[in-house]
Amino acid sequence: MAALAPAAEPKSRAWLPRRLIATRSALGWAHGRAVAERAAALGVEVVELPGDRVTLGLPHDPRRSYAEAKRTLALVVAPPSKRRLQPIAPSADWRVDLAEGCPAHCSYCYLAGSLSGPPITRVYANLPEILAELPKHLGQGRVTSRSRARAHEGTTYEASCYTDPLALEHLTGSLSEVIRYMGAWDADAQLRFTTKFAEVGPLLALPHHGRTRMRASVNPPRFARFEGGTSPVAARLQALRRMALAGYRVGLTVAPIIAAEGWEEAYGALIADAAAALADIADLDLTVELITHRFTPGSKAVLDSWYPGSALEMDPTQRAEKRTKFGSTKHVYPPETMQALRGFFEREIAAALPPARILYWT
Image (tube, rainbow, N blue to C red; front, side, top):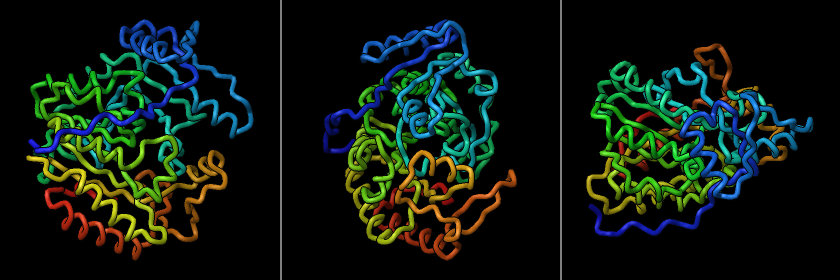
């Protein structure tokens, strides 16, 4: 274990919605009632709906509708279609959703093109049903379960595909419950989540038994200005250190990598800061995931309506087109830029973070 004691919990920037809207079925679950009670104890207005349809009566103006949706948390029951685990390459074998939506205000938000309607964050009350799906998929994945390079991770379950579970943990307690479940599950399996938040205090003493990997999603401070409502990057790195000192497997998700002017200096400093934060930690199990900025025509249209005037470059004429397996188009950096970025990160990480394993580049 490291010689240095973990730092104290930073001042919280935890998100509080203006109101929580709870469906009737959600309050029929013990976990759902606990979420409603947590929210009420934090001063959130709790509205109990007579049925299961979430209706907000949002204004027609897109900006006002966005703002109102971002101030709302919906407590619902995940239907079978949401509980059905899906492959989530290149991150993990399976996607497990504890919620849908995120309270942050990132002007590159990857959810913009994949979730329909106003960006209301929905949390799921029927956690026991969600957890019951995990054993059915043990050993069945293709990303780590059957990968020579990553087989030692076991069957992996990604909890942050459609949400940031740590951003909601003070309201839901869901992430803690899944970490406890994985810790008690004597199986070759691992939970994974990534976050832009730093309030890890409730997770540190959990009996995780090394079966959870927490990754901090980071960008240089100059680019983190596109990540409204999140924890400062320095706080995220200190949270990662605290988790590593508590015996968790940890990782860095550098995303989205932005090839703007001065990116070499900015990302070089970020990698150095990460190395300093993780220094002197014995038996450090560290991974790195590298994800470049990209967007689709659909996500660009949504983001332009949510964040008009954003300085984030999303000019299709400066990008290359990439076809997805579903036939849609993504705008990515041109090949020469991608090559320069990848070479830079591989060199810098090898020099500053020799224990790290780069899982993938995309």
